[in-house]
Length: 343
Image 1 (tube, rainbow, N blue to C red):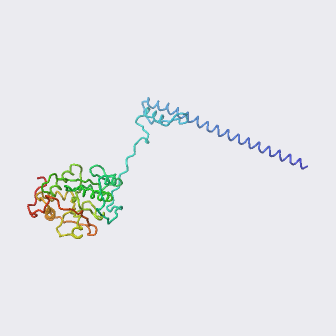
Image 2 (tube, helix red, strand yellow; image 1 turned 30 degrees about the vertical axis):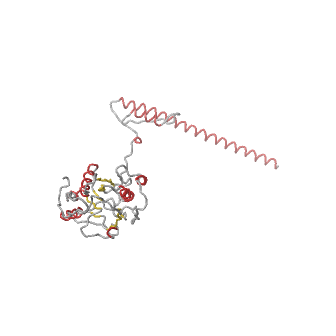
Image 3 (cartoon, one colour; image 1 turned 135 degrees about the horizontal axis):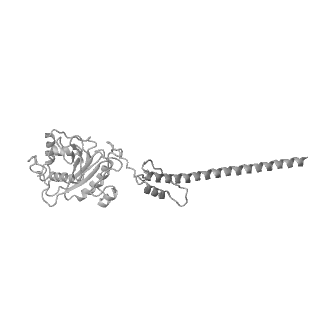
């Protein structure tokens, strides 16, 4: 009796396995025919599309053009079909071939977030131009730089009157390039050198610098700086303001105090409009001193006021040096004022 029941159980199991195999076979056949029918439909759509396009091109009524590409053919790439599409309809280029327009840069912030504040300025280590170039790889030839991540608010020409101060210039570039980059301004540096050994004329060199900078671009701000003055705080922003700007208001030479109310020497800045309003700088001051007081008077006589940073931010260190030969104090510091800048 037990053997009989065991045999019937095995028979039922075998029938069940057979039914499962048949069901699996039927499912595979259905899937196969379904895929085959889809591929057959794709071939027919491709052929009908091409025939329809030919009819549309040759017909007089015009109409829309539709292109179907069979991507199931072996050894065929999308590029070959795109080439075919270009031959059939040159005006219907795929959008993927269009170069996306660059996204416009946002304006640079008024208060750049990368500023560090008070700086340690020292002149004891040896400085070389090779070191300056290595430290500032993004500065291009001519001392030009523009921030790559934002649209600068100011285009600034920095003009330095110069003669026999190569060592000072290396320190100036070493400290000022990083400061100016952190301030997010578009700037160019102009070293205006006076050849020969005649008496030095600082203001005339500044006028020349203004004219030379005008040849290179539409600068809207001009900063005039002595080569031996280094700012001690990068929050002293080197751009122009609503009023002429005096930056170097607290030099270590004067005990970090303004020497007198009308002082406008060292480092100053004027917009193009302000510079033209005062008719530039006086050309008559040969030797040291006098021209900065004249500039201050030109500003006040033209209805403007000098603006200055906070005394804690406007600090400067001066590179110690002996006064240059042929740059003795000007004996006529109150001489002729008001000569045109183009004379």
